[in-house]
Amino acid sequence: MKFLQYSVLPFLLVVVILSLSGSTLAHSHGDFLHCLSLHLANSSTISKVIYMRNNPSYSSVLNASIQNTRFSTPATPKPLAIITPLKTSHIQSTIYCSKKHGLQLRIRSGGHDFEGLSYVSEVPFVILDLLNFRAVKVDTKNKVAWVQSGATLGELYYGIAAKTKTLAFPAGICPTVGIGGHFSGGGYGMLIRKYGLAADHIIDAQLIDANGRILDRKSMGEDLFWAIRGGGGNTFGIVLAWKIKLVPVPAVVTVFTVNKNLEQNVTKILHRWQYIAHKLPDDLYVDVGITKVSSSQAGKKTVQVAFIALFLGVVDELIPLVQERFPELGLAKENCSEMSWAESVLYFGGAPRKSLDILLDKNVIPRTIFKAKSDYVKEPIPESGIEGFLSMFLEKEADFAAMLMVPFGGKMEEIPENELPYPHRAGNLFQASYIVGWRKEENAESGKYISWIRRFYSYMATYVSKSPREAYFNYRDLDIGSNNISGYTSYQQASIWGFKYFKSNFKRLVQVKTMVDPMNFFRNEQSIPPLSSP
Ligand code: FDA
Image (cartoon, rainbow, N blue to C red; front, side):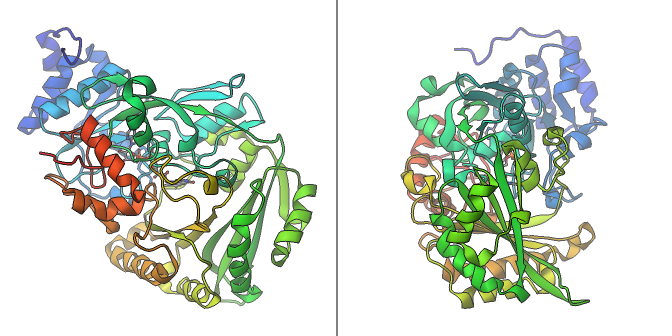
């Protein structure tokens, strides 16, 4: 069967494309373009779909969604072209032409990959950016929605909130995160204890595979449908859209933030939190954010621990519950605010609650330079251990560092480890993640900040999961292992990082990959390899 139905375009069109792309192109570059131009419908489409390096809009399209500016320096490898498809046939053509001309394809939805893998590669590559695939269709009657991968979480939440206050979706906190990468790696937010992950609520999907076939749940089969719900993006195909089940929430929810610092006995409170947070009723989620702040003593710094909560109910129910279960927190009514669930997303993102339109702003979260890592904790960390990591925040490299502790229990305790590729379920008290940032002008000294977070990670080793030391795929960390980007990667080599992200689900992911993409067309430094690839 022919890969695509297309009619050969007039020679004139090819001339237009090649002139758009400049005359000093490398051979494969020009061949790729020529190939793509033959497959696209007309020249007006082409100017909206292909951005070559000499196109005046190339840099702005490239940088539009780069969240970690560690990967937008002059030294960062740049794509030969950015393709922004308007329809599925453009995606099929891009697959066909990049395969034919040996170019690597990087798929980008929201551009939030911690290691920049959706827009950086060490080998010649093109970016397929789904920025035009951002439709959100919410059906409140059936409590479902279809959302395209290029939409942001904010656009999804806005789409739900525009129709109802009593439905929500259990995905991430940051409204600028893209649906495509987020759902592909699991995706969690403040509803994790009540409802689990975003991936737990996907009921259908539309995917284009390495052969350009458009598949839905039925035609892709349950193995592939299992793999795309958490087994990572850029491995099994390009997911165009997801059908999701919405979840009920009350019209009024309550949020609070209580800050404690080193001078306020915070070690003891944090120690208690570990015994309490995962056992609270599912309607209450209390996480922990740790940062360095100015102390009340002039010129001094302290460490602040913020206890941040979402309660699916009103404040008058919340206060007695917290006073009974977590009295050490000293929660008072003035710490709490009632609002709708969608407004709570703005609250947790630190945005003003004036208008939900902010959810649509792709620049609401400032772009930063950072390195991050993650862990899972199964036993409470002793007070001495907590004191140790809190004191590391007083080091000078930790001015822009943070640690987040996300309580598990609730729904996460009920879902079997192999239900989806995401394996970190029962038995975890919390997920811990660490991030360090620095200023752009300190880029030349980035090594000292990266050393700090690696030391922090080494310190935590005593207190976190072991064999494997588990990590969250969506908090991508190339320190834990990597594929060979241009050659064969053995199962053993990929197992080093694969078991940390997926535990024994990694084996099934490799089987699915071997079945659906044996030539390993969709690949990156942490994509699942097939059992034997070229
Ligand atoms: P991006 O476009 O960079 O893609 C990430 C990966 O998925 C890449 O490998 C890419 O090739 C692949 N991919 C993207 N679209 C695809 C598609 N349509 N088909 C196939 N593969 C595709 N996580 C979380 O669980 N909860 C949270 O609250 C947050 N919050 C958060 C805040 C901020 C500021 C950042 C930077 C990140 C988070 N994350 C998070 C992590 C986030 O879930 C993770 O980085 C996602 O992969 C981002 O998805 P994007 O589509 O934005 O990334």
